[in-house]
Length: 314
Image (cartoon, rainbow, N blue to C red; front, side, top):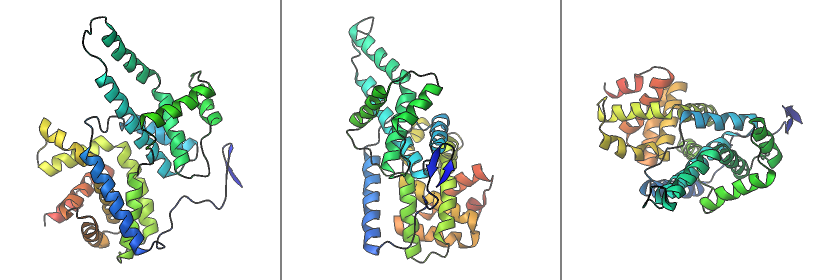
């Protein structure tokens, strides 16, 4: 056993997926399921979507996941769980009684809910990481002792019972529907399909680059999507209506996965990039222009490059 910090890690353990072993019918069924899940979420998209994907919150989760030696799927799962939980909390505040706000029960109820959300945010964040560590089937689940030790280092005085109640609060708020697919699941399935369809780029280095770029996008989400919006509408000052309609684009996991794969292919091997884009277009139905615009937006912030956009306009 090799040790990282105070926790044991099996020498033979690898969180990287193995590509090339999935039957075509399984790939097809999985792709249809993810596409349906993505469409269903977008059709029911709440107006508060993205409220907890700010850079500081995402970085906090990523650093904790790294501290606790969790794989990438767990860190993305934690971000998505916290996002969905907080949206439900915000909706609860919005639905709380608003009549007779001047010093009455309705007004104090809403104020109390807001204070509770603020005061328990870090606790809920840690609970989401704990739940994600269990969902990822990872060898290293974040137990109560580990979580409590961290919270105590931040001068919080929670008990083990309060930590368990926090996990339960997240589960109940989300109606125990916590096994949501992350963008990484979309990426890994699409890489499997690309390999099956004869993509010339090997899956392993492409996957490694995808993970790095996905991390970057989560941390620079607002800046990258702002660039994408301005590129798509060909205007540096989008209207409020355009920003509102663009929310569905920001929350589209299939587009995100396709864009990250395309960008990774361009970084690794520009010669095969066009082929990858064509494959992705055939697999998902997402237009080549949309894929190229996404790659341009990501590369502009990673490398300062405008090559994809220039190539498209030749």
